[in-house]
Image (cartoon, rainbow over all chains, first blue to last red):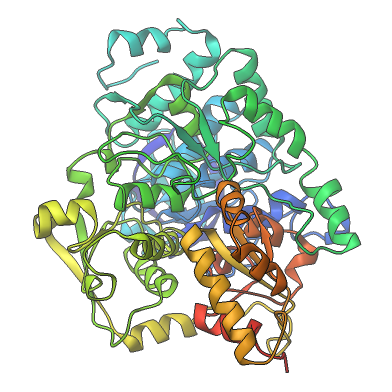
Length: 154
Length: 428
């Protein structure tokens, strides 16, 4: 077990299994399939589980993101990113929380803050957890986030 | 709410509800957004017009439409008129019966009602749908130093780098919030410090590098940092003429979509690099050297997403971001010449060129419009990325010279000269 102290961008408590992207997380590319086709039963279960659709993300491609503790350096790509995160949260298709090793980027911050102000429940978001956090955490590890930005990985 | 930044009396009254609850919530969101980046103040948006990224009436984006309704009902209307990204569908672009059902019934069924919402919120007019709003024919071209509240990664990076305007990589919705209040938080690319380059990129190629591959390589390397690019003026010259601007438009789009670049400086070419030179480079900037082998390595690593990698191309898109008039003219000449050389009358792969409505209108008044039509090329205002999001279109073998389109879809990337070669020769 190891603890890391970050900065709560959207404070809250959360427990979930880790899902780790070592490189930049492209929000639009990752969520586009789940958001557009998640309600179409003939397309199978993968979109319901919010499977990552980003073919360029070798860590996450085709892995379910729903209710995971998404651990990442930053988000990249289209400036629809924040809006996509907001929609994912509103529609119940988002990760449980976002844990950034680096300072949060402008697109992810927008998504997290929009969700905090316009959704029923916030998407807990912590940044500045450090490279050591990203080096340590592995897919499937249990993550517990506290209000003050302390992240416990076990 | 608790906040650390200093607000002017006007900003404070907005936060306290002087323009109603909806604007107060919008202001609160902007203050929280700024505080996440240590912004100490909000500054006025000084550009005449805004630009929004979200143009598509996707059925699933109900939370956005609900939010827009809340804004409209709360009279939280944009203080500035705005353009918006391209429309997702155009009946002129080839699509089968089933594909059209998916487009119109399952995907973009909210397009008309969303267009109506945009009009109420401040859309300039029905021709204002393009990702390249800064083109002369569109007319949303900010001046150097102006503060913007824009989104659309390719437009933001162009406005910052080529025009010298100041804009953060705002997300969709946040950019509208800035236009509604007339203020944006002061941080990042709005500040002199945030515009310093933390990477030096040395371009040592033996020929002019393909804009889309060079931008891709730099984006993947520097992510959201600011690169100062040396050696590109050798190929582009030292004046921002039409060719240089078109090159930088495509280069920037690739840096922004393959990474998260919001600003780049090109030595001896872009406005701030010309003014300040290497004083723009931050201490301890990292160095990335790009030569022919590095560009080849980058292109070779693009995954091929076609089900049958040896299949024949079924559709070709050129123009993501939208083509400038000069690019449209050049592509028309090149296609006509290529077909003539190869003894063909029409392109061998169904091909769509995309551009802004204003550019298309102007192009259609020239003689080249007939030349392009006779070559069998379709000219459209569509967003090819939105077209490719149709799961039925995903299974088509689509080729493109856009690195942005490659990144977000199953389309296969080829350099411009390769695309020209493919579409003007018999498909084997």
